[in-house]
Amino acid sequence: MANSIEKAVAAPSLDALDHQLLALLKVNARLPMVNIAKALGCARSTAQLRLKALEDAGIITGYTVGVGSTRGPGAIRAMVLISIESRHEPSVVRELAKRHEITKLYSVSGRYDLCAMLLTDSTQELDAVIDKIRGVRGVVDTFSTILLSTKLDRPE
Image (tube, rainbow, N blue to C red; front, side, top):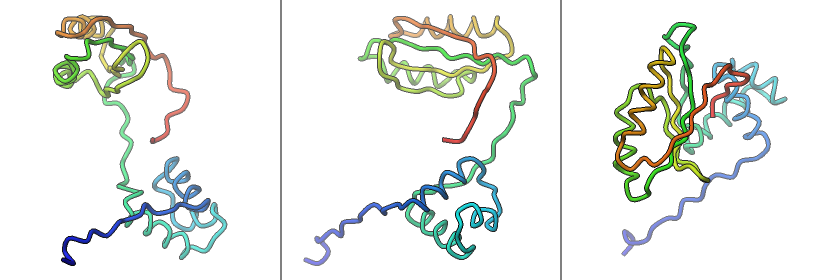
């Protein structure tokens, strides 16, 4: 019967040092360990052990590289809020996922159900993509806005 007993795995408890470490890595995941330790006010070995513990616990799931846009400086970024008939959500999401111009798609609360982040080469292309979004079965309404400049961009 020992096999039927399941061991409960508790989520690790994060303290202030762990939260500070995560905050530093969110701003720059490539910080040298010596700089991390200095910023945290602890020994390098302590910072390394904390980092390893966060990785082992699945709190840190990976490190990524930020890549600048391969599009020219005239690229158009836009946010399109989409209201849908709830019964069509799975098919709407599948259709929108096929559009390479949609870089992110979020489920949101409020008047709209989805928020799509778009990247196009021109306002004409943006207009065409929005028309295609409106043509998807189950889409009721859209509201779009063009993003002008990035004031802050941190990893989530």
